[in-house]
Length: 321
Image (cartoon, one colour):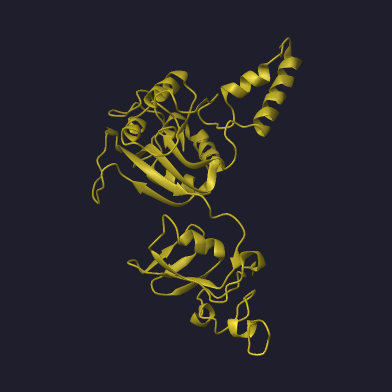
């Protein structure tokens, strides 16, 4: 687990007290807060001092390595060093692609202006494992605020940038995450508590959860899903529509996504009895009818790339068994 941003809230301390089972690595640009986080973890947690809170590629250790044996005498030597540093972090980033199974952003988004927030989310997406989980603790507003503000009751005693709930969820979707959901500290279906009011804007703490994994090739395995309700229909982040009770044709990638968190239990999966091995499957045809004929999953009619029915594979007198 990567804990991005340390010492700004009590969340890490509560996780440690609860005995979180994951091995936590800390990432922070402020050495004071990094030391505070390490102390919470008994000074045993792996930690990385970032050069900038919004960049998981560039760290102090990498900078020291690039500076080793270097003498900056003039503008040309500085420019050469700058190029060397960029190449170093491109080839040896502080955190590699798909390094973390889970990323927790501990109010880090509130520490940077809106112009840097999309870049931070892209970095989180880069470092998160393909089937990883993303948790973003953040202060949000119901009304746009034009500038950074000091928030009463905030765990961070400095001016903060507060996005609106809608804009932040849109940015998380645009970064590539799927299945994003907004959770308030105290489960409530009405009027979540706000910690401050600035003009007409109410400021609230929340956690946004998202997942990675909807990118990649789509293969035809003859699969379908049935949305169980209670809504009449729902849409996923790829634009698929699932109407209650209908057998919707899906590719293998979408099928696998829908069978695990955060969708697990909302849809019933239907696999074809003639499902081929994935390495032998044909690409999913976007012209496939939206609804899957029940005879496809039961093996009564074929689909592109389907395995021959078992009877044809081992017919009497064929000598195959």
